[in-house]
Amino acid sequence: MDEQNHLPNLKVPFLLLGYTLRQSLFVISEVIEKVENLALNPDELLESNIFFQTSSLEYFYSKIDLLKKDLLTKATKNARERAEKILPLPSMLNF
Image (cartoon, rainbow, N blue to C red):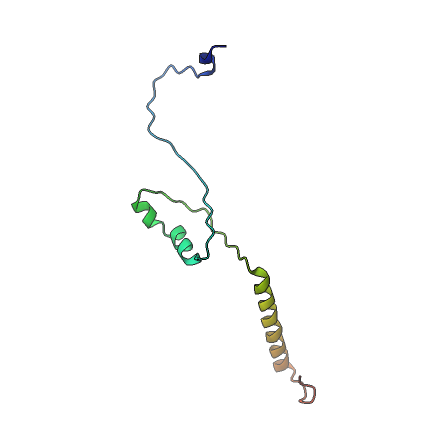
């Protein structure tokens, strides 16, 4: 089989001006401020002729279990303090 049969039959000449490349970039870093600043203010990249478009920023916290425990502890303490202000316990029952 002739390879030319698989090529497009172009009858009109054309000029190729360039390509568009789209690529996803995932950044994993503990320096959140720098990554966030680069994504929200890509001026440094533009100065180097790198065009940068952000579609969304997503944040993942790897120590979420520790954070949940800490938040629950603080919330419980806060709830108790608020409850005591609403309905103070007699001093003999106060823990």
